[in-house]
Length: 152
Image 1 (cartoon, one colour):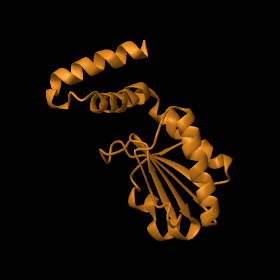
Image 2 (cartoon, rainbow, N blue to C red; image 1 turned 60 degrees about the vertical axis):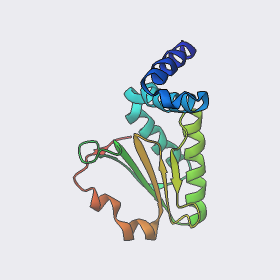
Image 3 (tube, one colour; image 1 turned 180 degrees about the vertical axis):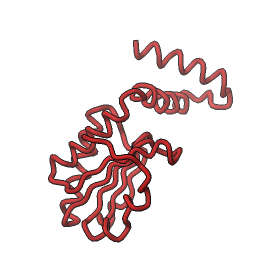
Image 4 (spheres, one colour; image 1 turned 60 degrees about the horizontal axis):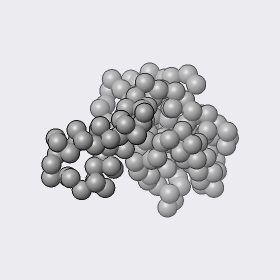
């Protein structure tokens, strides 16, 4: 069924965007669109799974913020912290592994050079892992204070 859906989506995409007839470009665009469609109804569950993956590696003060009514670039932020850069690395690695097992690849990862604040963009939700000091300094929850918190 998925193969038929991809084929149909590729046909529709090539009709809508004839300048992108190159199959590789069509396949990449189709995969990206299908990833969003496949996970559209379970975004909050995936955000929770991301939080649990962080918790499995002893992340502290884990919060899921529903930013869907405040911003258009994401529906949820998962925010957590750890006492050291090494633990931030372990948390981030586990989150990436668990999300990959769920069929999600990050659209982007920032901050791996220093590991004081690592951001992983999964499209509909964004994972933030800070060292304790960086989290206090940047105060992301204070910036998004109007966002309701989601239980996990």
